Amino acid sequence: AGGTIAGNKAYSGGGVYLLGNNSYTTTFNMSAGTIGKAGTSSDPVNAAAESTVGKHSNYASSGAGIYAGAKTSVTITGGNIKYNYASSYGGALYWKGATLSVNKLGSTYGTLSYNRAVKGGAVYFDADGNLTQAMMNNNQADNMGGAIYISGSKNVEINGAMKINSNETIGSNSYTACGGGIYNAGNLTISGSVQMQSNTANGKSNNGWGGAIFNTSSL
Image (cartoon, rainbow, N blue to C red):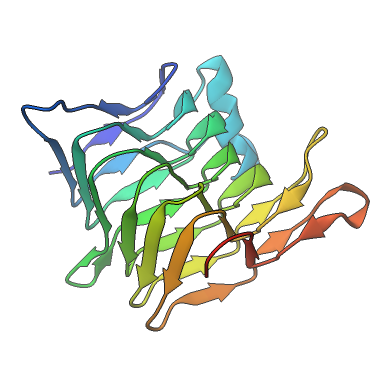
């Protein structure tokens, strides 16, 4: 499978909206293709914001690339989710489902890059999930979690050869900048050869905290 989903806009799930119910689980498998598209800006991260006027990529309040609601199962083993913009949560993915797995198929990684949101530039966890051998690079959050935001009491495991590099929180407008790579308010487990490099929390007046990880709970 392949193809591109880009230039779309919705309140939730700018590219894809998933929802199951008590009778069935909605399943989404991604091994190739792209959700999102580069903008025209010379700054590739800020290019995602151009989607707000319908120029490029996908836009939503939550889950600009994918919104995965209750009773959903998402597996990402390849392809790209990039240049998506969420005005609130989860630039690439807002996760509230049952089973999430982001890993690799052979030598191909699932890549979430150049996405932007207020919280969780790449992924906002509002449910338990697992990330293994994926790449999350060059994502941006205005407030918390340049790559990943984990909300309270949610259990998230990051393991294997996971790469979380060059993400940032920018502390724009009245926001402070916390967790350039990860903001954890839940229960986070990190194991294996996880790589976190060159992540930054760049707040106004030098008020950023936690270049790689800002932790308020269990780590």
